Amino acid sequence: DSVERGEFRHYMLKEIHEQPRAIADTLEGRISAGRLLEASLGHEAGAVLDQVRRITIVACGTSYHAGMVARYWFEGIAGVPCSVEVASEFRYREPIPEDGNLLVLMSQSGETADTLAALREARRTGFADYTLAICNVPESSLVRETDLVLMTRAGPEIGVASTKAFTTQLVSLLLLVIAVGRRHRLAHSGQEESIVAALKQLPGQVERAVELNSQIEVMAGHFAEKRHALFLGRGPHFPVAMEGALKLKEISYIHAEAYPAGELKHGPLALVDSEMPVITVAPNDSLLEKLKSNLQEVRARGGELFVFAGKGIHMDNGDHVLELDAVDAVTSPILYTVPLQLLAYHVAVLKGTDVDQPRNLAKSVTVE
Ligand code: G6P
Image (cartoon, rainbow, N blue to C red; front, side):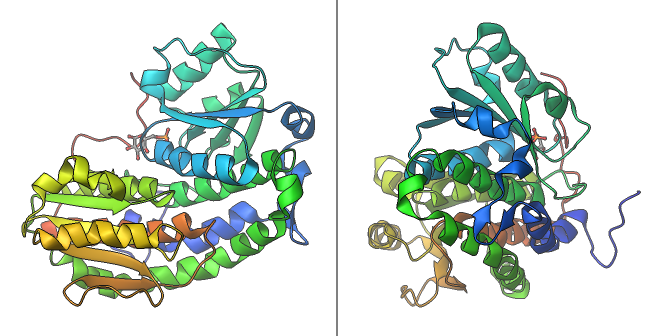
């Protein structure tokens, strides 16, 4: 292998540890003096961004989850409508073209067949006025075929289960949210500098989250024998829960599902008993109190709770709680992703699966 594993037992673990550097690299030369350097998005970017009125994000797998997080940012921070869809559905729909629509294609590899087909179909039908790729491979088909490009600088990702590509996609999306938002709500909110400041702190915060490794390894011991797991989150942490569930099923083969915590009572609560671990993303945000009452419903049914919580949040004594650094609400979904990656990793190691090459899956799916 041209990329070395070094001291790490698996590429996935190495790539989880590389995230502080990958995030710092993705920010390099793109922010300065508390602002986004828009020229770093390319010379033509400014003229295109002036026309953007709405965003459509299309992707597969983990890249789709990054888009799901970004929808909360585009709408809540930039004040611009945003829809997100998996490429294999989008390409066969007949979506209605709208003026000022920017189609954002997310892909680590830039070679995923469904994502490329979605781009080509959108071109053919005139669905979007402009296209932008967020991609990790500079020489990929996707990068060659889109109007604008924002490269994630994660470096080669070898583990089939995507980790550092995801967190750098989120960082790149946040830069795009600033660029678009400047022309909309962000122009008046004065939030740009606080977002940039939060991004600058992120590598250090992710580093400290990675240091929770041995505690998460202990937590993983409770899962190895389980057949199912439920992941809960709210707001932009719901897609983080989806990504956590995807990681667990991809490499440990445990059936995992993610739900927005408020939806628990509409079905999944029927599954909760002592055999169902419930993993919850619980940052200290505006939805925390609502989330806590959702968790009470789980406890009342004997469910075992594993909570990744913001500092100082009080949980029940019977819960397994892991505290994360206090973090800005905007960058919080990026930070909370990291312990879920580590959890999936350690469960898979305990189960003895092929972590870097899980059965039936490929790193890049270049056929339909
Ligand atoms: C495959 C990989 C996933 C990845 C997805 C999309 O399913 O196993 O890890 O998220 O493809 O890949 P892309 O390269 O387009 O991000």
